[in-house]
Image (cartoon, rainbow, N blue to C red; front, side, top):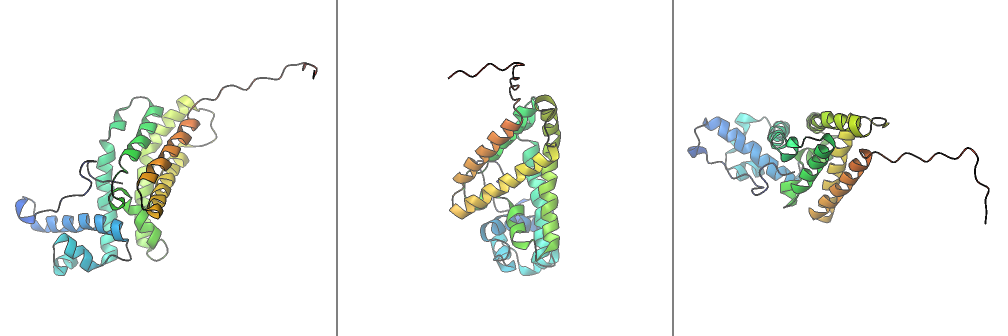
Length: 234
């Protein structure tokens, strides 16, 4: 998932001397922005503190002033990711769609639009982290879960509204469908990584759209059988 505007998938390096913000804040932000890029490109286990420092252009002394180690940075990076992506989705065009069914479908379309580019720029930090650390780093796993489920919860109100209008008798609930959308998206990222091509993710997301649309499309009523069935004639 790209965390900047679609025409600028990679955040520009922060120039510490040109910003009015305190230097310490800029250094921390530079480390977090770098962590988002490097961990998505190399994975958590293959990423070293030296990699982050070199890419961010800061010293290890500065790094350890802000973070106790790599796990501490990863947990902070999940929060940074949630803030950036939260802003991206809050201002996305689908938020302005009045009809709730059209809005959730526009959300899925938006997710397809932002998976165009290099894999490291368009895949999800949380999914990348949790796949490697779910058993070895419970604190990172918990941070990733909070981020994924937190985003899913933002979809629940529009799904509930769409369900009430278009599928009031459905046997599924909005929260489970919201979480399923995230499962499908994360799966799309895994397939894209396996094939080395972000394009396949868009195809997977298109199937997600069809599925959600089918859930929210009223089905035609079943024809009732006649009281007295007609006799069979060959």
